[in-house]
Length: 242
Image (cartoon, rainbow, N blue to C red; front, top):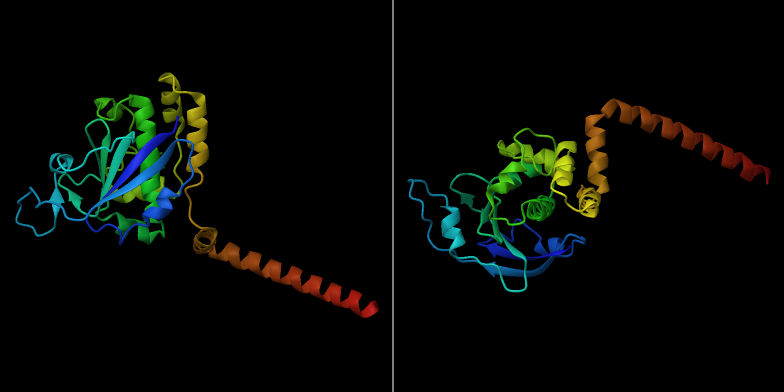
């Protein structure tokens, strides 16, 4: 059931991502077996009189391949794909993820780039289970245009990645689709369980709660302070009597 994934770093993407953190991620659905690097890319094949680097998936497909011993390869780059998508399949066992503008979106809500990439790895694995072959156009039948916070949100509006990266889920209709495709129930269960591990550190979760509910937080803090004060007085009285 576990897929072996090779990560390929394209260009100078290390400044955005801690790849060792992704490699250490524990999953029953996939494992990152190798991390390769190709810093120097060919000249862009897009001439639109703009100075930013952008590539077509065909151009990138000519320079990446899936290493032997891996089920598929995922290439990650900081540059833009010409159609402005952030993920493209290249053949049956290669995928390209563009981080162009992604960090600017995630940083607003203090979501890590590593969580975003890990979430994408789960989506790739799930699509492979559903379609059997990543190159199949069947994968388009499993994504939905509306934003539900689901792993299979299309995120046509790029800023919507916030909703299925902070706390990704499998929506009910997608779970039904898994069952119709006769995917092993254990795969669905493991997928849902592991997606719950993609979350912010506790301190950032607390900070977000405080920002979202400032009045309730103040009231709760006051109640806690009163209780602690009463407990301290009670303990002091007991100490004096002993």
